[in-house]
Length: 507
Image (cartoon, rainbow, N blue to C red; front, side, top):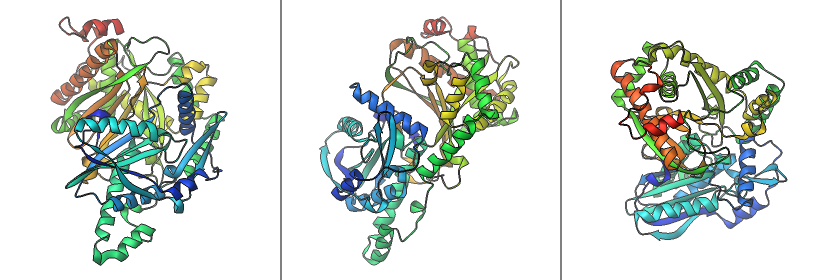
């Protein structure tokens, strides 16, 4: 599985097959009653934002997607049944949201009413036909104020086919997308095997749910998660050590969200269409060496990632403290949610000083302690965290400003890591507008790499690209030598560096 720009996933052309709810399923969805359980804060906020964007006539590409390749000729009926079983299993994918006067209500379609069927859509003649086709489907079909809030399809050729899925962010997150197509592919493979003439009984058992396979095991439900989040929010709103820690950190940083350390050339409230940056940081041998350097200094691999970014901030922007916002996958703290679909994330500030460290190894203990604090602070739900910083004096503009994020995903620990559908997979997001240069740093068995969606302006590119290349140089230096001196900002860009002027303006 690789996180990449959507345009970099380039399956071979063929016959596009779409999978849609049957008419009976659509009718059941349209009349599904409002669900009594609460809706998570992130989903509510996303649905409201999408509605406002559409009302203003703006395209709101608030979806995540994934694609992969499957060997063998496409069995359209089996893939339709696989999608049906997959959606029945995950209640968030059976949900659509209604937003009236700012109030978001969920409607849940009964599992027994879910049924999808496939039919030929159109012929894609060249590789260049694929991307526009996907964009058109995803833009039209993924809003979660109708059912389904996702688009699923296949591109069929003799001997193999691609499958793809895009979901509204209210229904999905990065981990969900990394899990989804692998799970669908497992169910599909089991159905195809069971469709052999001597295994018709097994086919019926799988289709009706009587046979519990690895790919159809129960998963934690969205609405139970939302109820638990509501309870945790109430507890933290009453005041806890974690919410006070959130306030203390924000007070030390002028009650502002973390920003990219260099000026990206945008005015207050200004955004630009994103463009992607991808940088390979370490190969397999480099990962082993970097991990050894982190452990020798008393930390873990992720601590080294934080420390390396902090060094980049020091050397390019003159920062004396690292201040960032990281993303946590909350599935890991919940029983039964390891393979659940949904937006199961929390966020936490990561803060540590660099003033007492002159080398990477000396910085690791501070990064390690900060990462452990952040893990504790991630227990605060987003709504409670925002309320806490508002109570500390943050302005509404500061609260609604999207922070510059850091995400770290180790794909080695996903259940499908040894299976073809997972290994061949690509994960991507909708490409809208941004004021940030958030980073997604990902690790698998062979590579550590970085992806970022930055403002697609010449100035922002002249700043962000050299920054990420400098980060690459830092981690490769550490992997090669086992440590690295932390330099002052004067070494950030020499006269021969084409990005030097932009970096100096940003600093």
